[in-house]
Amino acid sequence: MPAPFHTIADEVSGGNSFWIHGVSNRTQINYSLATIIADFGHGSDSPIILYYAKLDSPSVMYLRWDGNGTEVCHEWVETHRTFDEFAQAIGIAALE
Image 1: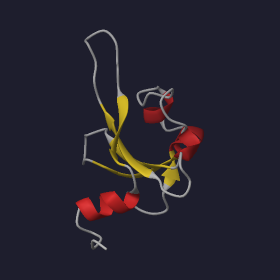
Image 2: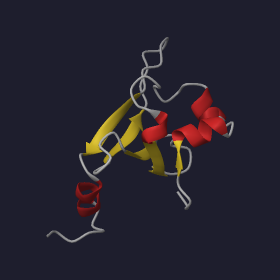
Image 3: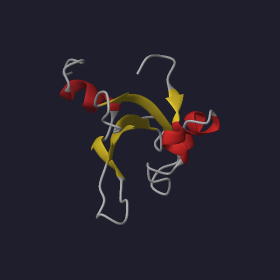
């Protein structure tokens, strides 16, 4: 995603229908603490966020789509406990 980055709460207040219609499991995360940083490409509808529940070290999460045919069961999945772990895993930071 290009800078400036926005929280999901910003997207909702701006009228973005993707977030307003509840596809992202509002009960699992606090939208004000979730900054959208990327997704898995055009049409994926699976955003990647920094989640600032721990203000000193945000975790990295993505939205996993799931459903059983009648009920949507999307959930947020933590991929890395910290941004540093994420950066090392994708090769944008050197191991210390």
